[in-house]
Each structure stands twice: as C-alpha cells, then as structure tokens.
Image 1 (tube, helix red, strand yellow):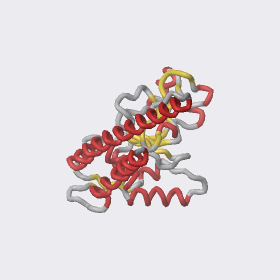
Image 2 (image 1 turned 135 degrees about the horizontal axis):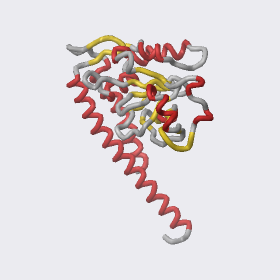
Image 3 (image 1 turned 30 degrees about the vertical axis):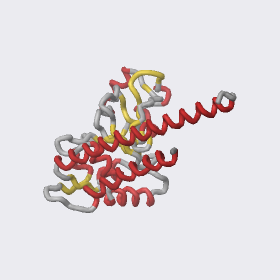
Image 4 (image 1 turned 90 degrees about the horizontal axis):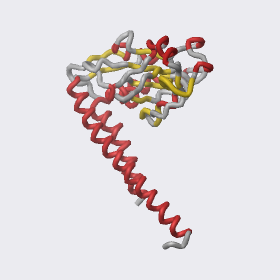
Length: 229
C-alpha cells in the first residue's frame, strides 16, 4: 500500500513537468511575446542586501523575516522562518521587501531552486543568495514564470550552461535577467494555473493518505511491541 501511494505521488510530480512541457515547452503559439526575463521590468528583479547593509549581528529572534536558501524547499515556499530583523532595520531595507506572488530563485548554494511567495507572507526581505522577481500579473502569472525557470529547455539550458562554466557554483542577477522568456497569452497561462491548482490538491491528498498510513503502521507496531494485539 505504501508503495502504491508513493508511486502515485511520484507520478503526480512527473505530471507537473509534463503538463508544462506539453503546453509551453516545444510550441510557439500565436500572440506569444518573445524576449527574456528582464522584460518584467527594471524594478521588478532584485537580490538582497550585501555586505554592511545587513550584518549577522543585526539578525534577531523575531520581527520581519529574512528569506534565504532554506525558504525554498523542493520548489515550494518554506514558511518556517529562522532569521529575522527588527522593524526599524526592515524600514531601512524596504527596497528588498518580497511581496505575495514574487517568484524566488536561488543563485548560491542550491542553484536554481524556486518558490512562489504566498499571499499571507508577513513583512520580509530576501537575502543576497536569491533573486526575487515581481511579475506583472496582467502579463505574466507567477505559476507560469516559476515553471518556465524550472522546466523550459531554453531556460534550463541557459542557466545550466552558466552554472557549468562558473569556477564556483553560482548564478547572478544578470544571468537571471538574460534568461530567454517567451510569454504566451494570459488566458493560456490562466488555464495552466487552474490545472496546477487541481494537481496540487491531488498531491496534498496523496501526502495526507501517506501520513495516515504511516501513523496507522506506527500505532500497530507500538501495540505489537507492547503485546496489545
């Protein structure tokens, strides 16, 4: 039973990529705008504070969050915040603030890992270890942009070639901006986002089923150990 649930979860994960490639990976639909990631706007792509702008000694146990590489887990946003700054420090770093719907991509450490910032994000900034992109939702949906960076051959080839050529593993904002980007009509992106929402629900159901099975087996094992069966 565990194997079948795990297999279903794996199939759903594979379906995500297959769905994107089928819709956007190989075709050039009419009405598509072809450019690069920089087209989202000069003030919509940014990395975090460098050097003396944010010192380690200025991190606190509470307050606005500081998002780092660990804020992206398996291309999902991780809201288990471990770093914070004071509200007064946040006010000086507001230009680095992340917003709901921002697409994050790591440029150090786990290169190219992505996440979409959720709607309920508290005040937060990103670090220099990632780039935050604020898409114009009248043109580009976060779900489409994230998966373009993850799955599209033009994007993966561009970023992969950059990573392989680096002396030390790392990307930078210039490389992210120059990533090829072909934007299909918004209606097609909306259809895709709707399908992703359904797929996400299926994955959550599979994860819940697995968790329930694991809890049941743990309970049975405990009872058997105590001789209660």
